[in-house]
Length: 297
Image (tube, rainbow, N blue to C red):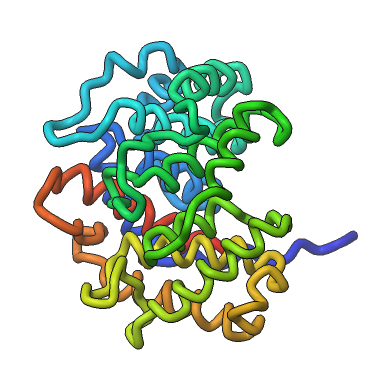
């Protein structure tokens, strides 16, 4: 009889963050928070009944537009991307049907711009926890569509990939989103973009372990979470980061990023929002991203 490897011990930081999101989801729906709780629950963390009503809503994409986010919320197209991303995670963990995700995929396809992107009116580098920039939105939409069963050679996906590869990576925010969008793809254009992005990301990590959108700003949880998620994805195939990180350096950067995130958790289990704009919405989103980063790897 083959013995099973012992389960990884549960992190009290993640457990506390999940408890915060369980409470907040009774007041408001947030795709980033839902994704985080689904991932936490799949790894053995207590999520209680907080997701039950939310999942019923999530599995009815045709009704998403009836939901009115709190004041200060962003473009409804982004809300659909966030809900579709959460639904994709629910489907992966057996909490939603593939037919539900197929309906959501049709909504995303209808929202795609002619150039292949989603939310192209937002400037590159405009990513915030509650309002993605165009690259992050396009990556999120593309990921949900692939999860729905759409093939990489489908016109919608081809257009998104073409748009991504036509961009110039100039800022840390661009670089973080681009690394997530490129994932492990190995074509020549992707390799060049990834090399540029990795160089910017490595230079931007602070001694504290955190990242920020520019050299003048203090490290932020959102940027650090994106960096950890991107580097963890590359760590599946460390050779994809070899232009900038040796394997042991990649692991060290991830560990320092996670340690920074853990150090910034508030007593109530949340992580601090970046600004006063839509503070409650930001706090839910940023806590969701923080948990996703801590669960990665």
